[in-house]
Length: 163
Image (cartoon, rainbow, N blue to C red; front, side):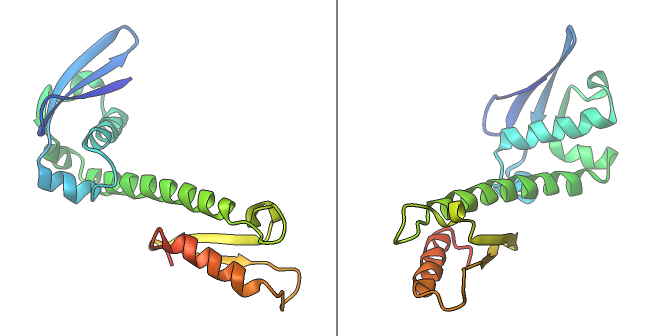
């Protein structure tokens, strides 16, 4: 188990517990390095947590320095920054997919009391580069409310600036 406690804006106490033993580490994190790795997609605590998960895959908790700046990890493990930056992007992607799903499930058919998701007319939802594309599968091409449905989807997803 990894516990991250903020000591101040720049320093964190990290406690790593395994079995009946634990280690404690003081980790400093510079604001510019935090911005570089996370683009504020995750908190500082989450970044440090993910960094320790990365380190524990590489070495034992006892081998991790007791006091260090997060930047030094790259010296020992050159792939660190690439892996951690991917973790931040993945987390944001997961959160955004969930939000998109929630939004789409709230868009109701105007004539019956079911969402478009419940009706199964929204297909192939894809997120790429902070944009959403989807297929609106209607029973036939010229459904009278097609424009209404398309505009409703655009309006709701536009609130997340994803169109």
